[in-house]
Image (tube, rainbow over all chains, first blue to last red; front, side, top):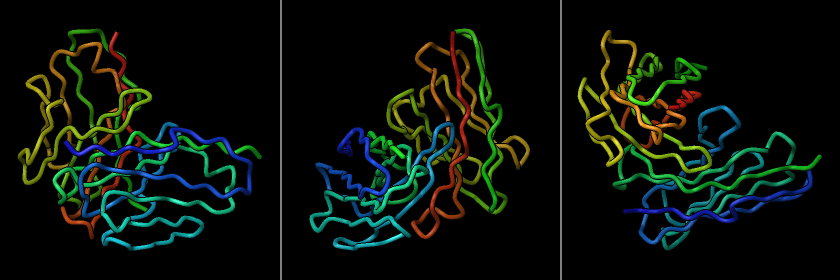
Length: 112
Length: 115
């Protein structure tokens, strides 16, 4: 089946630093999604990417849909303590619809 | 902003017991999903539900699992005879449509602990 591999698994950074994480797949995805999960809560959609090569921003977050359609990265600029959480990439299981497969997540810890 | 509401937030049950997890979708949403997250692992798709029937289910969603929308508002996940390995966070998610113009909204989950 389609599997998404995220790296790094965890990051511990200083407040104000920029962060970069990525997600790769052995198969092609038509859509890439980035979610954030805060402790004790459900995932919340941050950015959705629909087109190969697309670069999309949401405030301090920027994500890109790789040209090969097999990877995506998420950057966070000038990190703040509330950026702490687990960041998941996700894509549609059958390249359509809302049945998603998720990556294993990148746990971000920010030191004030 | 409208929310997906799940109850209970935490359920402890003994192995072999039946549990029912409840979800109140956002009011104009028509597509409903259950996902599961075992502690420390990734979120996994269980089942999708539309127009009062299952649209798709994963290998995890075996005969011990069932879903229904008994009263037109609540959307429930039932596990008939719980096993230790069913311990996980269970997330309900809903969407207005099935395409990507309409992203999934997740609830805050029910933590199920099977002892």
